[in-house]
Length: 414
Image 1 (tube, rainbow, N blue to C red):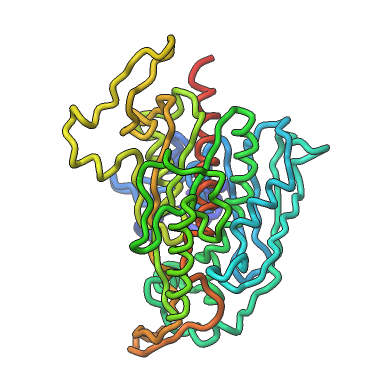
Image 2 (image 1 turned 60 degrees about the horizontal axis):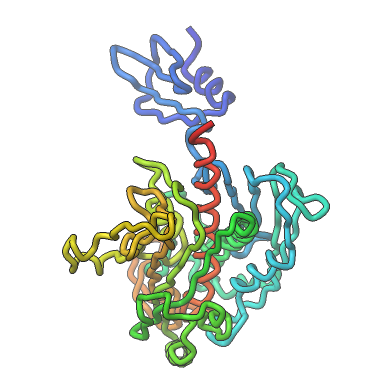
């Protein structure tokens, strides 16, 4: 019989993650369905699962189209590796950079003052202007960090931030801008999302998001009333010029007070074919919700009529089918383009609510690393409202999800 420690070492070499329930010796080991079990006195005491089944620290997103990202807010760079991207897709580098520019800090008076060029550098997977089908590696170097702004908070927990939870979970945290919990991590999402958009464009699928609410200033829920070509005309990324001005003025006022405000981003996906989505646990709206709620500061997700539909009767809510020149369509779209977790060919639309930025330039009560009550006041450059910069991130996550599930659908039938 080999020793307990030798077995654990052997298991780890095989690339597994061990969950040790009780330290003791064992009598028998066996392998079943990529899982290792150890039995003693009829009880399982160790459960080890191959890393093929678990994503390490969950820094990867997607199934077939898959992004693995890395980097921190004040580290050397943010980057990622994209796997499963189809070959032969024309890669418009200018388009990818423009998508990053929409996310980058310092772009207007209502965003953080951190001035980063955020120029993306591709390392692999692109040749002669097209994707090769091999992993696409990329980097964006951090250039304008000011870590000294965070010295005053390295020993305290910022209210509503990830400081406390990271410290308890990992026993260490990067206090400089939040490290891995910083929204700067979303750079990699925007790069991958831009590539997904290029692939979806070849399929006739478009993904468009806009700011539909900031604080009490709200647009009509009917997205068809707005001209999407006007979204980029203002720093608020709102297609209604008058409401956009009100939003900018309101955010500016909040910023002067040292406070922050939240709101809603609406997203519309057009041209998606029928049949995308996998029942029972792979429903498309669930996948979109998972993608959106993984974005920093996102607090809620609803698609179709969402909560508003609760006020209607079934006879009012049902999307009635009809034959439109030989094509089956629905007269309404309360379902938001998804029924039974599968696309029905109509527009997909959903809303994502974002909370006010947790970092405010006001004194707040908190505790330090020793649990002693104290106060803190944040310094540095921060967004008074995430909505304008969240718009391209919502689009990116939506594009990645749709492309991934489109590719999954291709495995349904031979």
